[in-house]
Each structure stands twice: as C-alpha cells, then as structure tokens.
Image 1 (tube, protein in one colour):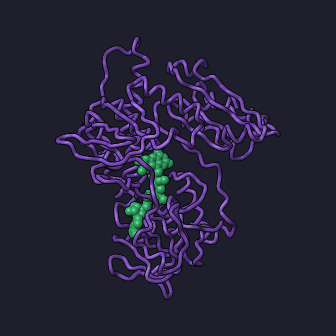
Image 2 (tube, protein in one colour):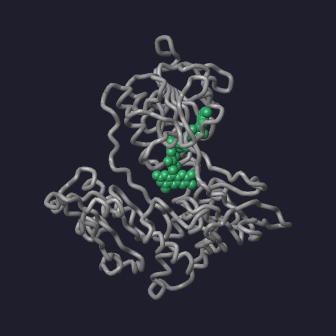
Image 3 (tube, protein in one colour):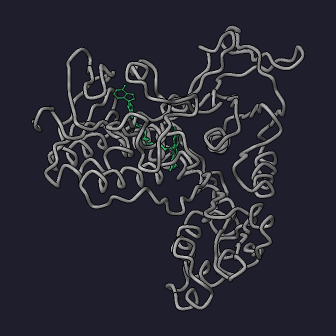
Amino acid sequence: MSGKYDFDVLYIGAGHATFDGAAPLAATGISVGVIESGLIGGTCPNRGCNAKITIDEPVKMTREAERMGDILQGDLAINWSKNIEHKQDIIDNLPQDLTNRLESNGAKIIKGYAEFIDNHTLSVDGRKVTAEKIVIATGLRPHRLDIPGTELAHDSEDFLNLKHLPSKITVIGSGYIGMEFATIANAAGAEVTVMLHSDKILRNFYQPYVQKVVTDLKERGVEFIENAQVKSFEKDNDSYRINYGKDQSLETDWILDATGRIPNLDNLGLDKVGIKFDKTGIFVNDYLQTNVDNIYAAGDVVSNDQPKVTPAAYFESKYLMKLFSGQTTEPIDFPVIPSVVFTSPRIAKAGVSVEEGKQKGFDVSTNDLANYWYYRVDKEPIAESKQIHDKEGHLVGVTEISDQAQDAVNSLLPAIEFKMDREQVSRLVGLFPTIGYAAWHRA
Ligand SMILES: Cc1cc2nc3c(=O)[nH]c(=O)nc-3n(C[C@H](O)[C@H](O)[C@H](O)COP(=O)(O)OP(=O)(O)OC[C@H]3O[C@@H](n4cnc5c(N)ncnc54)[C@H](O)[C@@H]3O)c2cc1C
C-alpha cells in the first residue's frame, strides 16, 4: 500500500512494455502492480518472437543443409508435430519465469481484465485497484477481416499451435508475420498461397531485397496473388473456399488472416477518463504521458513512429522505470531501433533507409556478400548489404539480406547509434572469422 493509493505504479498488461521496467522499478522500493488478463509475458514470449523463432530454426537448418547438399548427404525433412512440441517446450516455462522475475523484485501480479473507473482507479474483473500512476501497456491483437465467413480463418497464434500441418495453406496479407509463416509452412511441405491486398509486399523493407525473397519463394512453389480483394470465406466439405476479385475463388485447407494488428483498447474505459487515441493507438507526449497527467502508455499500444517490435517496447519500459524512479527527468530519446523479417534469407535494417539516404544525397554503398568468402563458406546465394554514410562520413544506416542479416545489423548498431566516423570504426576489430568482423570490416 502506498499512501492513499494501493500502488505507486500500476501497469495494465504484462508484456515486454511492462516487465522489462516493472521488475527493476519494484526493486527500487516503489510499489508496483501488474494486471494481466492472459499469460504473463504477453505476445512476444508466448505467441510471438520466441515461439516463431523456435519453429523457424529447422527451416534455417534445412536451407543450410540444402546448400551443402553435395557435402552433407541425405534428405532432411521437418517433422511438424515434433517442431511444435519443441516450441511448446521452449515457451512453456516463460510465464512462470517472468512471474518469478516480477515477484522476486517485489511487484504484485493481479490476474484479470482491467477497465478504468477514474484516472486513479481500475476495476479488475469487478475488484477496485488504485494507483498514483497507471501505465497502459495492452499491446496489439490480430486484425480480422470484416467479411462473411471471417470466423473460418485463423490468426498467428493458431498457426503457432497447429499440431498437424494442413496440405494447403492460404495466407492473407504480406506483412512480416504473413511472409515469415508462408516461408515456414512452405519449408515444412505445405502448398502455400499468399494473397495480398495491393502489389506491395513487406512495405517497410527495401523493395529490391523483398523481391529477392519473393522470387526465391516463388521458385520454391509459393504462389502470390496480388491485388486480391478478398470478399468472403466459405466452408466447402473438408476444405474452404476463398472468394476474391471478380468471381474468382481459391480452395484451401487452412486460412491465416495476417492482415495486420490493432491496438487492444476495447472495454478499457478510456472514454471515461478522456484519454485520446485513434485506431493506431494511444497518443502520448515525449514522456510517454497521455493527455491525462498520471496515465502513461508504452509498447505496441502507443501511436508513434517506432516499429511495433520488442526492442521498442523494451526501451520504452526501461525509460518509464527511469522516469518513475527519478533517474531521469528528460524526454524519451529513442535509440536506433532495428527491425528484421525472419524469412529465409532474412532482411534486417537499422537507421537511415536506402531511399532516405539517396534522397539526402548520402553515400549509399553496396556490398556483394554472396561473393565474399565468409558468406561463401555457407554457400549463401542471396546475400547483399547496403550501407549508408552521411556527408561527414558517419555510418547512419544499414540494410542486409542474408541468412545472418540480423547478426550483421546487430553488430553495426553501436556505430550507427553513436555516430562513429570511419576512423573510430576502424578501431573496432572483431573476432575473426565471424559475421561481426565481416560487417565491421565493410563499415
Ligand atoms: C507472430 C508474431 C511474431 C513476432 N515476432 C517478433 C520478432 O521476431 N521480433 C520482435 O521484436 N517483435 C516481434 N513481434 C512483436 C512483439 O511481440 C511485440 O512488439 C511485443 O510483444 C510488444 O509488447 P507489449 O508489451 O507492448 O504488448 P504485449 O506483449 O502484446 O502485451 C500486452 C498484454 O496486455 C494484456 N492486456 C490487454 N488488455 C488488457 C486489459 N484490459 N487488462 C489486462 N491485461 C490486458 C494482454 O493480454 C497482453 O498480455 C511479433 C509479434 C507476433 C504476433
């Protein structure tokens, strides 16, 4: 109990936007409560990043084995059910681990669905809980198409829990979740079709690299239907029919609606306290503060320009911990937040994009990595990077397509974040031979 309220700080949601900061905040002696209606850990550990990267691992390995086919002999196939069992084994303990992390630091977990009564009071399944400050960290949930038969489609969580892989899978949407799951399903042996609303795939990534991924997937049998105006889903005996365009239809065994993610704001009672938001999320100022002084928001549910990924949620959570514990009074100063799509190969990026670099007259250089000996060890056919240096010679951006793009981009983050010039970068000599060395060497 803290003064006139039950808690100093009360978080709604227990995802990365909460637990990364709430645990260390509680450790400072500030009284912290965390309300969660589902699994502790939220999306990323339970039905996002951790689960996805586990089922992708055999995909990555079969790609490697395929390239080494003349050296590593014998056929490899993914056992889907075992893959899903392995994923479950990896994620099963995460909610308990995160509960322990929060509780051992002194935070109190309150299970239930929160709704505002006033700006200091929440109702959690009917129980009143009060706090000096409240943080809304309720994340996003899958968008569902508003068409007849929408209930016949499934979402990303259903895909991650599929015990048996359907023979024909149709993915509606070509954002990062749609493309990653299309890659995984295709590699595991399903017949995959991706239907896209426009002709743009992975619109936030460098399009020539996206085209390389798409061409590779097409060669592997994935079909892409552009400008498909999906109209309805129907059940047709044991399969499903997707009606689209002008009287066109497609038969499939399983439909993944991957048409985006929307903020979890329903039934939160935001109107009762007058918090401003729109369909992109909650509006906040540079202190992650909403228009109601004692109420903040963090993570995916915030309407801002940051990518809706774990590194952004993590940084915002840590920032609020520093703000609430008096370690900072400054506005949030976002570092470079990288992003990646875990297709095979991956596309990863950080900082200034190729397009923006060109517009600003920066130096955009191309590295043909497929012909660089370190990438040739792995026989990677699709590997290239673009590095962007500003007019003073600082590395300000990178984008890479390769199987190891995420690690290459990670290793360049310090140079981008701290605006190192070429001389400073030349003082960084990584272990040899590693992907980090290869990346630094070109910066
Ligand atoms: C399939 C998939 C793959 C992804 N892969 C990656 C990846 O590879 N890398 C990456 O960086 N990001 C990835 N992401 C995104 C990442 O998961 C999110 O950016 C991150 O989880 C955001 O954290 P958050 O705390 O803001 O929200 P969440 O983790 O969604 O947490 C919000 C929590 O709030 C709870 N909640 C909502 N409303 C209420 C309420 N009224 N009362 C009580 N509790 C409530 C929810 O139950 C949920 O647990 C992926 C997401 C998905 C879906």
